[in-house]
Length: 315
Ligand SMILES: Cc1ncc(COP(=O)(O)O)c(C=O)c1O
Image 1: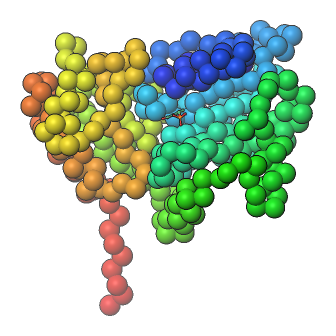
Image 2: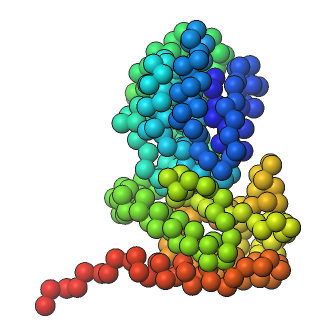
Image 3: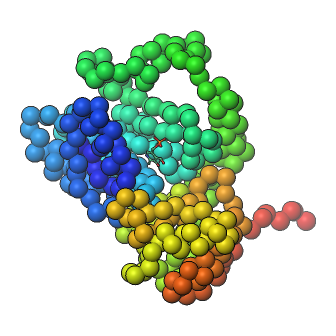
């Protein structure tokens, strides 16, 4: 298995795969960029014996706010003429950032209920290509709960091979109604992009750095913020939590203390974002972090100028 090192969650996949006795090759990354199509193509070209069975990528790295370019990665696998299955974690992108399992040629997509679907944790979803379904027929890895054949056979008649989380399924029905009928997916994606842009303007207004380096890979569901040297992000997070009851994401593993994360996914609107950014601006000040008091202003100006004017009723 070739796993692109994009951050903490890629690392967790690597560890889990190793516990399952899979042989994992970690394609190194600096956590500030997404999976590199050129590096993947190069590695796959070098695998003349076709020993690599899968290329695994986290679409949106929740630990950094970096979104990998899935269509370009697919092209890289195709360019190398390699048969490896393409597997993508969309846990913090599905229903927040555009994602197309079929059109982008992904073989296995994994998603969860706890982020853009606005539900408690507890449901997970797999989307499987015909190629992946075929591969599972000969796969020797032991499996039970997630054995696709049992899921598919039971699913045909509306059943589940185990006790289903019925309450979450009712919640899912409501979440899908909100996303698909009440707002529409395109509007949901645009809302998250707009909030992400406002957040980045706030970060720059404070004189701080957005963690993601490549604008093509800016995440629409969360923004990582690099702390100035000599200031502990977790201390600032604690001050902000205690002063304003606002919980920011911590820097995970090697990023501990060095950055924090502002989430802007799910059921979120302009004023919720402004409250969040005001809390961060005030809190960084209280924590003694030298920031300019221009972030909230910049975000607010952008939200106002980019808000579509309501259509006037015809006279
Ligand atoms: C991108 C990504 N992958 C994997 C996970 C792990 O999900 P779980 O904790 O449900 O196993 C998370 C959780 O936040 C995530 O954001």
